[in-house]
Length: 252
Image (cartoon, rainbow, N blue to C red; front, side, top):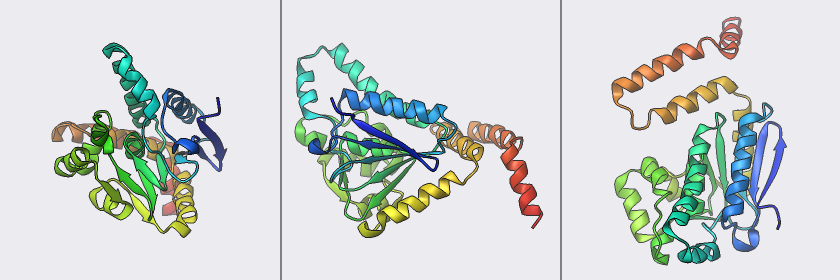
């Protein structure tokens, strides 16, 4: 079996490339396991400053492997729930990794593939990219990925997307909050590379604390959120990066 995710570390950027171009990088169990291993390495390797996820071939990811999904129709509910939790656990892990995770999207990001992109902290897309959740058109439910989608775009837009399965252009996806930045196809590699290099140059402790508080605020009451933010604010002032950066600025 070929590698489902090709992993490379260069200049502080750990890139995981989905490697099933003949199947539009469809996600199967082996892919989930290899993505989980990528996240474990990112968490533990001090040389990794940023994680990038992209797809080989013409598409980012067309969603879950349909042959594996069809076979699951003969499994027990308990087996299928465990499989769904394995996929969902990947998204939980992505939020736990203290380093920014960036989706580099070209071609189509559909269904679970769109969910994978949305689960990343930043989504950079080519102008020709397309996004959508067509599960209902296949008699399926985009249940796991709705957890990210509702948070990213709000109820009305999210329900429209999952109930109709319609696709969005990259510009439309950016307008509703699914995509962070859109670049012309010809400039994408250069522009996306600039973003990744910018992130590698930022204080690792600052980014880690920023990511931590950003996601922990989700669902918190306002007053509790202020308390958490004060704790993180205080902790950030004790870091070596904070002291060095302010000393450098004040010395100018």
